[in-house]
Amino acid sequence: MNDEEQEKRSRTNCGKLYRMILNGCDIALDDEKYFGLSGDNVQCNKRYYSTDPSTTPSDVKFIKKKKYSPKILVWMAMSSKGVSNVYVHKSRQAVSTDIYLKECINKRLLPFIEKNHENDDYVFWPDLASAHYATNVLHRLQEKNVPVVAKGNNPPNVPQARPIETVWSILEQKVYAHNWQARNLDLLAKRIKLKAKELEPKMLQAMVQDIRKQLRSMWRNGLYSIC
Image 1 (cartoon, helix red, strand yellow):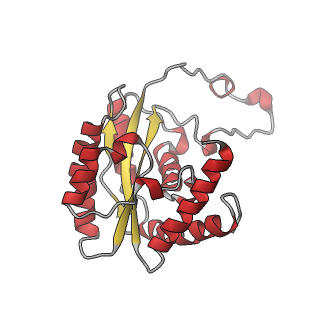
Image 2 (cartoon, rainbow, N blue to C red):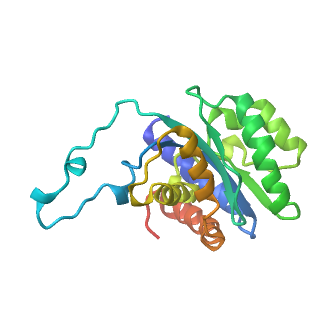
């Protein structure tokens, strides 16, 4: 698809998803993000203010950065009820369908849904990663009666409607607060799991409730309208 076709599909599917959740249906989302040993990519850690540049410490002026610095991939699910336990993928290999099914769906998403949404009207909205719509993954979700946004109805490239993108930014700020750096990946993983538990439920609830507003605006006015 070209850009125009993709935007048309995104806009149409925003409308479909909006109508699906119009009557108070809750939404569970999942996503993955890379974390490195340091937070040099975090916006609040990029600035150093000084009235006299000559007094700026050399370790601030000249920061060494490895071209291929160690990092880990973190998976997490969220809804208005909170966040799931996180899965930390330390392998350099991508998350395969089997790993996604075992570690993310079976061990974390399903227990999270059973705990928080057993008697709720909800829908699971994954992103469009191939593993998320693999046959065995969809079969498992169907087996557990988890309603899923159909792949053909899933709007592509609408991060502004998926609050989990904002949650990642907040989690990054918590993990790397005061320029914290991890000595190794094990310490990084431990800190990510700890800080994920500090995410405020009221904030998450407000973010998920705002999805309807965002989807409606993008459906009615275009993907990049400001509401």
